[in-house]
Image 1 (cartoon, each protein chain N blue to C red):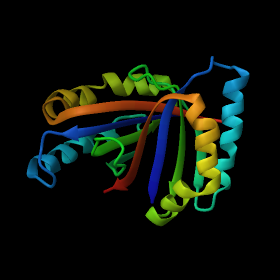
Image 2: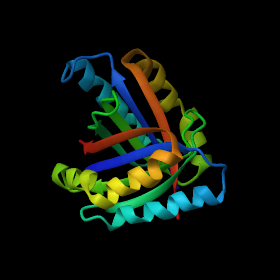
Image 3: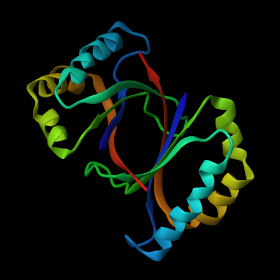
Length: 97
Length: 97
């Protein structure tokens, strides 16, 4: 199981309509086949500058690859992610013993 | 519920005895009161340089604060984390609607 997380800052003021619109647009992501347990996150550590995050899981790399090139994901990235996100970090992981 | 995660690189070669020893020492962390669902993670995204992670949950900030100042945690940080970890990022989050 691959855990895919991304943490980011937005170009919009906290609580703004643009911020709400961005998160509304992101609701397309969990409709993509293979996306499991999609969650929107509020980053709360003072030790980094990120404000929000998304988390989801994939059964394996094949599903992750399908997601990455899925037209709904590509469209979200082009129309919402790129104009909205000022900085981000992607962190993916698997649980080990 | 606060999700506390930290991703890091070690000063040790992959698979080395020193690496194993570090993870063995980390097994003290989930014995601390308030630490829920402690997990060791392998970071797998090529988009950042971190190799490993720890994840855990706390019911709230009080438990998180107790963990941070718990002698077993402080001892782990001083004796194992500081000499072993070359870089890290802490990311904490709460799930939002």
